[in-house]
Image (cartoon, rainbow, N blue to C red; front, side):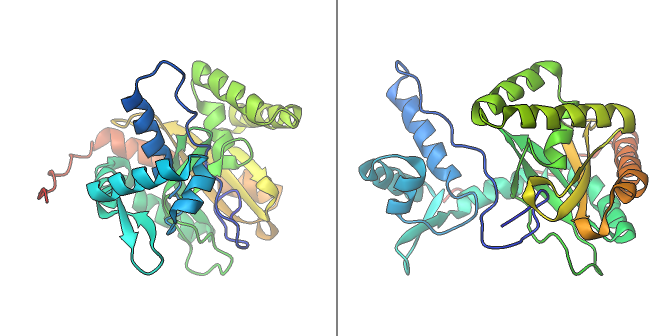
Length: 291
């Protein structure tokens, strides 16, 4: 089980955005097949080994459809067959694509030493993520060396946007049009709890306007508190969200507002300045052999 910044507290799997909706009637068969294939790949978000029966349960697709998709994706290298369990896992082609994309995000190369320094100074976990539908996907984490209660998730963990500091910070900083679309999607997902969710988002907007960051205490029902800042980074597309989190027992409101929040804002400012004054040159393309 993971909390608002990915702390492991049990056996639950991380939050993940819902799969894409089925294609509307009238779309051609090729597009529908593509959507089904991508939805099936999304079921492997936790890098598990899954059989066709479990994939059918998670996607809602007929077993025959799942069997056809796993066979095709395996042949293309996006999935691989596990001989012991007779299930499927993420293939090397998909892992290679992810590694290549992350390798060329210049922000991560610049941000790592700053994040590591803040993690060491605060004895908390520092992370950075981007939005994926109604979740925030963590791209990088830096953990403290001496704090035994660390956040032990890794890149790829997806956190809910409406109930975590990192998600609420994104909502507070997103462009107005994007905010409107996200609020409407959240209202549909949480019809019963919408007043509470809307109030939480309003508080985050106010906090961001006053302090420049968003904080949360024991959010997502877990024993973790955090502060987060969303920002646009020079030479990078979209919003990136930086997060500093740790055990709620070590982080009262004063610590969040007087220490962690200002420290995180200072780190983000330094990273932005570094990106502005020293643009990161793109890495040379990888040598690729087509099998």
